[in-house]
Amino acid sequence: MNRVSEILGDKGHDVLEIEADAPVLEAVKRMVDANVGSLLVTKDGDVAGIVSERDYLRRVARDGPTGDEVTVGEIMSSPLIVVSPETTIDECMALMTDRRIRHVPVVEGGEVVGIVSIGDVVKFKSKQQSFEIRYLTDYITAG
Image (cartoon, rainbow, N blue to C red; front, side, top):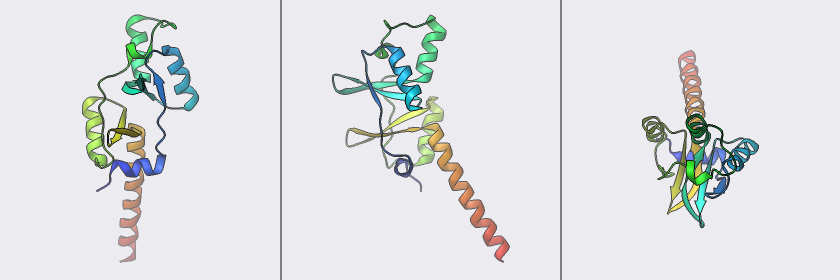
Protein backbone atom coordinates (compact mmCIF):
# COMPACT_ATOMS: atom_id res chain seq x y z
CA MET A 1 0.00 0.00 0.00
CA ASN A 2 1.53 3.31 -1.10
CA ARG A 3 1.91 6.05 1.50
CA VAL A 4 2.25 9.84 1.46
CA SER A 5 5.87 9.41 2.57
CA GLU A 6 6.64 8.03 -0.90
CA ILE A 7 5.42 11.24 -2.53
CA LEU A 8 7.58 13.31 -0.16
CA GLY A 9 10.51 11.04 -0.96
CA ASP A 10 10.14 11.99 -4.62
CA LYS A 11 9.35 15.69 -4.30
CA GLY A 12 11.20 16.61 -1.11
CA HIS A 13 10.22 18.09 2.21
CA ASP A 14 10.43 21.81 1.44
CA VAL A 15 7.71 23.88 3.10
CA LEU A 16 7.38 27.54 2.20
CA GLU A 17 5.99 29.79 4.92
CA ILE A 18 4.69 33.33 5.34
CA GLU A 19 3.68 35.31 8.40
CA ALA A 20 -0.04 35.88 8.99
CA ASP A 21 0.42 39.65 9.12
CA ALA A 22 2.15 39.79 5.71
CA PRO A 23 0.27 41.51 2.87
CA VAL A 24 -1.69 39.17 0.62
CA LEU A 25 0.12 40.43 -2.46
CA GLU A 26 3.43 39.33 -0.91
CA ALA A 27 2.04 35.82 -0.56
CA VAL A 28 0.91 35.84 -4.19
CA LYS A 29 4.36 37.00 -5.33
CA ARG A 30 6.08 34.27 -3.29
CA MET A 31 3.81 31.58 -4.73
CA VAL A 32 4.42 32.79 -8.28
CA ASP A 33 8.19 33.05 -7.76
CA ALA A 34 8.37 29.55 -6.25
CA ASN A 35 5.84 28.08 -8.73
CA VAL A 36 3.71 26.68 -5.90
CA GLY A 37 0.01 26.93 -5.11
CA SER A 38 0.14 27.41 -1.34
CA LEU A 39 2.15 28.68 1.61
CA LEU A 40 2.01 27.61 5.22
CA VAL A 41 0.95 30.55 7.40
CA THR A 42 2.70 31.17 10.72
CA LYS A 43 1.88 33.45 13.59
CA ASP A 44 4.45 34.06 16.31
CA GLY A 45 6.39 31.03 15.10
CA ASP A 46 3.43 28.65 15.24
CA VAL A 47 1.51 27.25 12.27
CA ALA A 48 -1.79 29.14 11.99
CA GLY A 49 -3.15 27.94 8.65
CA ILE A 50 -2.49 27.71 4.93
CA VAL A 51 -3.03 30.23 2.14
CA SER A 52 -3.58 29.12 -1.43
CA GLU A 53 -4.24 30.57 -4.85
CA ARG A 54 -7.88 29.65 -4.33
CA ASP A 55 -8.05 31.63 -1.05
CA TYR A 56 -6.76 34.70 -2.88
CA LEU A 57 -9.12 34.25 -5.82
CA ARG A 58 -12.11 33.85 -3.53
CA ARG A 59 -11.21 37.09 -1.75
CA VAL A 60 -10.83 38.99 -5.03
CA ALA A 61 -14.04 37.55 -6.49
CA ARG A 62 -16.02 38.30 -3.34
CA ASP A 63 -14.59 41.63 -2.22
CA GLY A 64 -12.91 43.11 -5.28
CA PRO A 65 -9.26 44.09 -5.65
CA THR A 66 -7.05 43.55 -2.63
CA GLY A 67 -4.36 45.98 -1.65
CA ASP A 68 -1.49 45.87 0.78
CA GLU A 69 -3.91 46.43 3.67
CA VAL A 70 -5.33 42.88 3.40
CA THR A 71 -3.22 40.36 5.32
CA VAL A 72 -2.60 36.69 4.71
CA GLY A 73 -4.23 35.90 8.06
CA GLU A 74 -7.51 37.40 6.84
CA ILE A 75 -7.85 35.03 3.88
CA MET A 76 -6.01 31.90 5.03
CA SER A 77 -7.73 28.56 5.55
CA SER A 78 -7.78 27.46 9.16
CA PRO A 79 -7.82 25.10 10.98
CA LEU A 80 -5.51 22.93 8.94
CA ILE A 81 -6.58 19.64 7.48
CA VAL A 82 -3.50 17.41 7.63
CA VAL A 83 -2.25 13.91 6.88
CA SER A 84 0.66 11.90 8.24
CA PRO A 85 3.49 10.31 6.24
CA GLU A 86 1.79 6.95 6.93
CA THR A 87 -1.54 8.00 5.40
CA THR A 88 -2.22 5.96 2.28
CA ILE A 89 -2.24 7.84 -0.98
CA ASP A 90 -5.79 6.69 -1.63
CA GLU A 91 -6.91 8.05 1.76
CA CYS A 92 -5.12 11.33 1.05
CA MET A 93 -6.80 11.62 -2.35
CA ALA A 94 -10.22 10.87 -0.83
CA LEU A 95 -9.68 13.49 1.90
CA MET A 96 -8.66 16.12 -0.64
CA THR A 97 -11.64 15.29 -2.85
CA ASP A 98 -14.16 15.23 0.01
CA ARG A 99 -12.90 18.48 1.54
CA ARG A 100 -12.36 20.11 -1.87
CA ILE A 101 -8.79 21.11 -1.05
CA ARG A 102 -5.73 21.03 -3.28
CA HIS A 103 -2.93 21.19 -0.71
CA VAL A 104 -2.51 19.26 2.52
CA PRO A 105 0.33 19.59 5.03
CA VAL A 106 2.02 16.38 6.13
CA VAL A 107 2.52 16.32 9.91
CA GLU A 108 4.73 13.99 11.90
CA GLY A 109 5.35 14.36 15.62
CA GLY A 110 3.56 17.70 15.68
CA GLU A 111 5.83 19.18 12.99
CA VAL A 112 5.00 19.89 9.34
CA VAL A 113 7.39 17.75 7.28
CA GLY A 114 6.05 18.59 3.83
CA ILE A 115 3.06 19.62 1.75
CA VAL A 116 1.34 17.41 -0.80
CA SER A 117 -0.74 18.84 -3.62
CA ILE A 118 -3.45 17.10 -5.60
CA GLY A 119 -1.07 17.34 -8.56
CA ASP A 120 1.56 15.38 -6.60
CA VAL A 121 -1.01 12.69 -5.81
CA VAL A 122 -2.23 12.42 -9.41
CA LYS A 123 1.34 12.31 -10.74
CA PHE A 124 2.23 9.50 -8.31
CA LYS A 125 -0.91 7.50 -9.14
CA SER A 126 -0.28 7.94 -12.87
CA LYS A 127 3.29 6.71 -12.53
CA GLN A 128 2.07 3.67 -10.55
CA GLN A 129 -0.56 2.84 -13.17
CA SER A 130 1.98 3.14 -15.99
CA PHE A 131 4.24 0.70 -14.16
CA GLU A 132 1.38 -1.76 -13.62
CA ILE A 133 0.30 -1.56 -17.27
CA ARG A 134 3.87 -2.15 -18.45
CA TYR A 135 4.23 -5.11 -16.06
CA LEU A 136 0.94 -6.69 -17.19
CA THR A 137 1.76 -6.11 -20.87
CA ASP A 138 5.14 -7.78 -20.43
CA TYR A 139 3.50 -10.68 -18.60
CA ILE A 140 0.85 -11.17 -21.30
CA THR A 141 3.24 -10.91 -24.25
CA ALA A 142 5.82 -13.20 -22.63
CA GLY A 143 3.27 -16.02 -22.28
